[in-house]
Structure formats: C-alpha cells, structure tokens
Image (cartoon, rainbow, N blue to C red):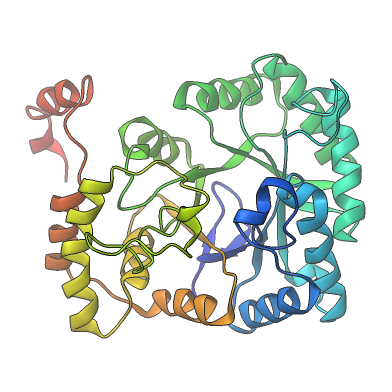
Length: 341
C-alpha cells in the first residue's frame, strides 16, 4: 500500500480508502448493502491489515447507521484512533424538518455533533460537504466549517460533487477571507466516465486539491459481471442503476480491458482500479464491498502495473470526445508547447 499527501497538506492517506456505503442498509441504501456489525468488523479489520488507514462514510448512509457501525467496528477491533483518517460528510436530509438538510450553519454544526457521537470519536479528520446547497450562501457554509476546524472537532475540510466554478469560488473565498480551505474533492471518476477531466482535473492539479474517487467501478459495471451478453439480475445495478453509464462505450472499454486482465491473470475490476491509480490527479480510490472476496479482489489492484502501451490502449478507447472550449485551448497551446521542458 502506498500513501499520498491529501491535497496541499502534510496528511498521508492510503491510495485505497475503505468506503462504508454497504454498512447498515436502511431506506434507499438497502440496494447498496445491508451489512450488520460482524461482517463490518471483518471488512474493517482486513482493510487495516492491508495497510488502509483511510475510511470514508457519510451521515446519510443508511440514515446514520453506517457511521454507527464504523465507529463500533473501530472500538470492537481496538484500533488506535490516531492511526486512522476518518472522513464523513454533511448536507443530506437527516430528518423531516426544513432545517434537517442542507449546508446552513445550524445544520452543519448539529450534524457534526451527531457524526461525532455516532462515530464514537471526539474529532473528524476530514469533514466534507456532500454537494452544493443553492439555498445557503457559500460564505455561511465556509464560516461554519472554519469554526469546526478552529474548535478542534474537525482537522480538515473537503467537498464532494461540486462543479468546477463552485469549487474555485470556495477556494477563492477561503484564500481572501483566511478561513479553512477545501483540501480535497470527492468525485465520480472511472475509465467509463471521464467527464471530470474536462474542467475539474485541471483545477485540482493547479490548486493542489486532492481527489478522492467514488464509484471507481461505475456502480459495479466494471466489476467483470457485465458484458454485451452478461446482465446479471442479482447484481447491484439491477435494483440501483447508478451512476449513469454510456453502456455501449463501456462495452467497448471492457473489450480492451478483458484481454489485458487475462494476460496479467487479474480481474477486470483490478484493471479498472489500477487505471485510476495511474492517473496523476488521483489521491485515493474509495473501494466498498459486501463480501470479503470482493474486498480481497479490490485490494490486489495496488499491485497491478499497467505498461505504457496498455495505458495508451485504455486511453484511446475511453477518451472523451473533443468539446469546446477544450479543443480550442488545445489548438492555441500548440505554438507554446515547444517551450515546455
């Protein structure tokens, strides 16, 4: 297991992060996973034994149950809290009242306390907004998060599912008002969905913001279970067809991935994860599992090395179609590239 700096910080996080969306199983989350305490303990233990020090959850996962199971697993296993980097999120609906959702000061401060209680800890390493809230001024959100950092209840703050302009606006406000800055972005990125590369990846590299990848297997589509003639009825996408995937293009990508996987003696899922680990903007890839064998397979991705030729083949079949202003920017760079060392 390798460790990378999280954005422009001195915090080292494992290149694989344990995702906890399968923990619990309440409400809409039953389609993702319904693990109770014993299997959760097993997955957490195996992850830690493999070198993972980063665990990601959210208050909305199974209506708080995921956080509870995560905190209890850490307690049950006797893990040293200071050896772990625990991340959670805030924004989603956590009650019936009008203020039980969003990124207002009231909701953020209330949910931070609730997450601390459920996780059985007195601080959160990375507290992330789970998306943008168009009703709440960004300044209010950032001031509330800064207060949590100042109080010691939160070490760093991050964001998730933001557009490039939203993230850049937040970074600019933090710089000019000298408040806590988003050190990471958690976003959907996969070889079958490279939209992030248009605007967000260049921003992350320029601003030194870490990238945490969610759904690296495109909601299971790149798990190896799917193909042109394979559509298992018992797989996750049968009941929860998310995130959106251009399936025909994804099948073309799988056609290239499968022989690479076969030649290396690894799974298609490992190739998909390894491709992400080869991307310069990626800090950590979040993996989740319902069963120990799924986790074991994903953990092996850190040992898969893709050659330059293999990366080229994968890039060619999965690359984005040119889109303005990208193609114009590329054209206008041509007369300057010769000066780049």
